[in-house]
Every structure is written in C-alpha cells, then in structure tokens.
Image (cartoon, rainbow, N blue to C red):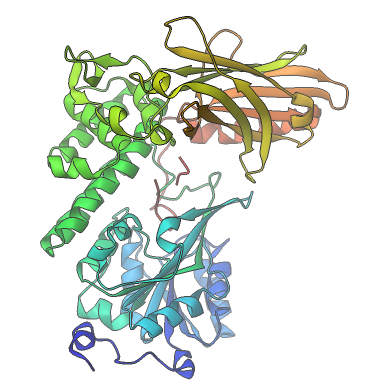
Length: 574
C-alpha cells in the first residue's frame, strides 16, 4: 500500500469485479412516510448483488411505517430495520444510526420519499474502486411529482467522468451540498469522525458535506444518474427545502452555512471556505430574496436582520468571488437597516437576473444602485459581456377576443444597450411541466421615443394554437439580438396595470370557452395559464384552491418534525 493510500485508509488496488458483491450498505431514513418508504427500500434492494444490506431507520413513525418495513424484511434477508424509540426531530440522527450499523465497506444514503435509479450503486462503486476514491458522486435529478418533469442538480459537476485528487482542486464541489448522490468509504467516514449534526438541525447536509470535504478525500465523479429526488409541492407535509414560509427556516440555513464555513476554514481549506460563502450569496440569498414579497412585514424585518448579522462576517474577498446578482442583493441588505426596494431586489435575484430602472449614477458617472445608496456599486454592468448582463424587459399581455398581443419593452442599461444596437426580439412560451416550446414570433425592436432609452415590439399570440396543447402553464422567454452580433436570452418582467394580470374568458369555436390568465411568478416574470373548455377552467380553479393553504405567509404549525426529505436548493426551481 502506497503512503497516500495508507493515509486515506484505502486499498492499494481497485476491487475485482467479484469483490463488488456485497460492498455497499444503503441507509434509508424515514419518518411518517408510509406511502413511499417501501418504494425507496425496494429501489435500493433492486440495485443487485453489490448491495450487502439496506438499513432502514424508522424515526419512531406513528403511521405504520415500521410495520411495513418489518413485513418487507421478513422476506428479504438483506433488509435490516432499526426503529428508534424516540423521534430525533431531524434527519441527522437516523443517518448516524445507519453509519454505526453498517458493515459494508461502502455506504450511501437514501430518503424515504426518493428512489435510486437502476444501476446507480454499480456506477458509483465502479468509479470508487477504479480510482481508489473515498467518495464517488453522480448526477441527482429533481423530479416534480406528479408531472414527472426533471431538472438536473449541479449538472456542470457531472458532465463527464473526472477524478479530483483533493476537493480544493474543484471548488465547485462546495455547491453540491447533497449527501445522497454520493458513495462513501465507510472506513473513511469513521476514521475522520464524519457524522451529521444530531437532533433537530435542518440543512444537516451542509455540515456533513463540509466535514467530508475538509477531510480531503479523493473523489470520483460520474455523469450517471444516481439519485432521483422527488419534489412534492402539494404534499400535506412539505420537505424542509420547500417549507420556507417561517423565518426559522432562514435562521437554520444561515447557521448551517456558518458552520460549514467554519469547518472548512478550520481544516485549512480557505479557498473552499470562500467558495462556500460565494455559494451562499449566489444561491441562498437570491432564492430567499425572490420570495420576500410573499411574506409579511414581520418576516421581512426578521429576515433582513438575520441576513445583515450573517453577512457582517464577510470580507471583500468573499464578496468578490460571488456572481454580481447575489453580491449586489447582499450589499443592499448590508447598506440598509430596514427592508427596502423589494420589488427591484426580486427582479435582480431572478434567474436570469433583471436590473430594472431607475439607473442612478454618481456625480462622476459611475453606476450605482440608487441615489441614496451610492455605496452599492454596479461597475460590473460596464465591463461584463452583454450576453450576461441583467437586461430588463417588460412584458404586457392583454387577452382579447379580437386578438391577443404580447407587448415588450427593452430598457437601456448605462449605455450598453444603445451601444450594441437592439435589432430584434424573439418570444417563446415554454411549457412549465414538460419544457416544450411554443414559438410566439419575432419582431423588430424600435425606439419608443427619441431619447427615451427604451425599445418596444409587439407580437400577436395565436391563442387557438396555444389552447390545442390543453390546460397548461407557460413561461415567457425572450431572445434579444443586437447589431454587434450579441444575443441575450432572458425572461421578462410582468407589467401590472388596468386589464393586465387578470383572468379573461374568451369565446372559442372549438372549446366553447378559453380561460387565459397572465400572471407574475415569484420572481416577477410573466407567465400564462391556459385552460380550454369549461372542464379545463374548472381544473385550473381547483388547482388554485388546493394551493391556497400553501400561499399563506405563515401557515399553521405542523405536528412533529418535518418529513424526512433531501434538502435544497436554491430548487429552484426558483
């Protein structure tokens, strides 16, 4: 065994093909999830002979989960059921129970409402053995239930196979805070004392992942799908990552981020620690800032104060690493004692980012956030390529029986737009569930008025063709083209006003009735709900009514701890 391998506690050769049999323990945790836990366990057992044991840890569920697991274990010798006698209040303690109980040389984690896709364990185990890696990681996909739409998590990390000798060589690893899309050498975790925070500790993955990276493992990355994260937005009990209505969720998130930073810095991984702070600005701050308009005044004040306290520890180098949108939002919060400019911050925090007027400058002509916050500089808008600038496009859609038109307005941005020469705008509606595109059309951008600093275009919307797709929600996307060859793809700000953003019922020869509802998403973008026929309209209203309890600013408290589920991000989809 070479010295480097000895230090890691790894074998000096990859395991032979036969050695992979019985090499992995899958730890499945669950609380009050009888509807899904056996499906999760079966997906782990179905991984084949590589799985020596599936350790199902039931966190004292009152819904019969333990009985279902016991019945399954009676016919499956690889399944071991651990039933906690006292509920732990979180995800960390049951996972630690699984680490303690594992006998296989490798282990991985699975939440009770998710599944492992076929071949996941083999793909990770093969990579770990071939590269003598303490950790192997693969692609996780977020699957919306019931639509089935999938979004990859941190896809840039898993675009191709890679071996990372030390985490500092791939700082982007800090952004993948999930513990469940990874295979760990059991001896590595135990040798370094790597465990999850105990008890009620939301976002325990943040801390666990920081401890793993701080130990300096060799990592093998694979492009294979190794985990399916089910996102159930209409569930009776929302997962931690979706249940963000109370300020305690933000308090827990900032505390987990603080601990992760301290762990990495304490291990001498200064670059990783800075990257963790940059990730907080880019992901967490932007995601929660987009949602401030949904909360009441008390939440906003508390969120603002917590954020200011957390960001007070950041230095200039921390801010410099973060992309501009999150950095600017954070600087506005730090510069202001009370919540302010929330609609504009929401637009800036959108994905893609939009910087809406007014566009203030210092006496010297430098771009700044506003006249009364000149310390928040916007110098990046003068130097960044046009294709990534936060260009602001307003969109207005007024459904009419005589013809529906989409009107767009592009704003100047400190001379960058005029300098590039706006030429055309192409509008497309994207189906919310399956991602299919409905082309609206392309139109020339023309100055609204000489010297106005805005350009406008209007396009007809064929509502009959749109209705043929059935009841659906569509998101507007625009592609701006400029005389200098630059192209910018973005979303559009939903313009409010008389007759805008209201439900309209139009007569339809084919359907009898066509319901159109332009509305603003949480990030302020224009979207359109379409429901053809009386049944489609009724279905839309039923879905909206079913969501009403979720849209309240402070829903009633739930009994017990949250349903155990994978945590974050910033999905999100936003």
